[in-house]
Length: 93
Image (cartoon, rainbow, N blue to C red):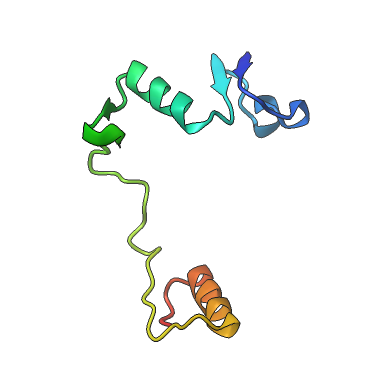
């Protein structure tokens, strides 16, 4: 298997169970990711330099991963409370 991009050989694709992949690309910077997406036809360059891709009906997000934040200030305790609520999306802050 061919691996492209900087990666730690101790944590190569095989260590994650990827044995039949033709190639793995790791840790590319944003310009290279944009170039790859356009070359593969997965996205197009939009006005102003943005990358535009169609996700179809599946966006990779779950409707259960949202939470509401009420009255959160900038105090460390508020930040900790917000973080903990992100871990349990069903709770309201």
